[in-house]
Image (cartoon, rainbow, N blue to C red):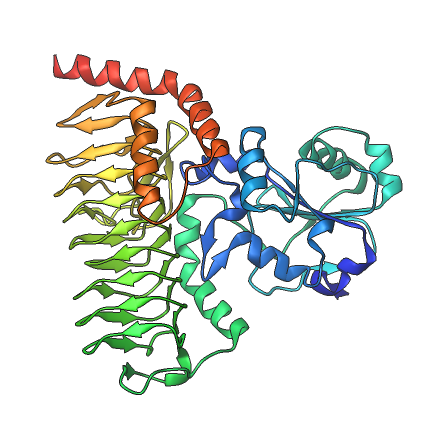
Length: 431
């Protein structure tokens, strides 16, 4: 049997596709394709492409939800987006697949491999695809399941937002090994544990009185980052390019902090996607924070219930049992919290929402709403929200593109009904 990473040259196309389960990853996947989600030291897409190492970008097709296609094309211009046609031998890979180095068995025989009831990956020849006929990739794969049958995949799929947090520490360890750069540490940096488990890019500035603890796992600090004095960083942890770790921060185990973030206070087992600020004191634990988020001073999320019972998270309007004792917040892009904000255990905060203290947040806050003193409101509306987004992005030298603007306009409309219902209910409750 050959690993998929060695076998791709036998086929013409690789198609990485989103399926219907992708909406269970909201609000994180409202503004990005599932394969753009970060875990470990890179995105799901980066890891999938490692499976098919050597594949040319022109041979990779990305199939995403229609409204996201222009944004994905803008972000990933080297790949074809929503152009797939079943006219050549094809390897199909689920956009939610988490590749951690497992062997994906393919021998040239056609196969449909499933995990948790969903297609994880598949291979079909041109002749079989012609029989399957036209349609969306998920429709084609449904027909292939009937035609070829299925086998159980050994790989994992990201089914829920908390899966990203659950597997993050493991993926930091795995990707640290893949990169093979351990032992690069400036002389004056204090390391507890083996220096071989620490990599600090030569362009990183580490100030005095910083402790890096690698006893429980590796620490990787990427190019252009700064780590200010009196900071503690515990592995496994990844700190992205041009991110600043503020004075007296405690970055505990299992953290992945993407590029161009400003992070202070205490952070534990959390992922910050990138370009987000948690500048001041406050606790963030077992959470995933999207892009362009600003968490006001002392913003704190709960990740454990007082009775130690399993945490429920609202997904698509319904509570879902996570099977986990520790689950933090899932925060969509462009969310803002005021100083002194407290987020409930397993809270879901929709994109472009504003959360203002003093009340502890509800379990779910819809996109584009404001939550103030127990009441939901429309806030300033979409136009003002987009102006705020432009202002924040310009401070990091980034422009809000026309593709992104149209995406937010679309999402504002499709979430309008839910938003208005929450506003009506909260007003009735207050009356």
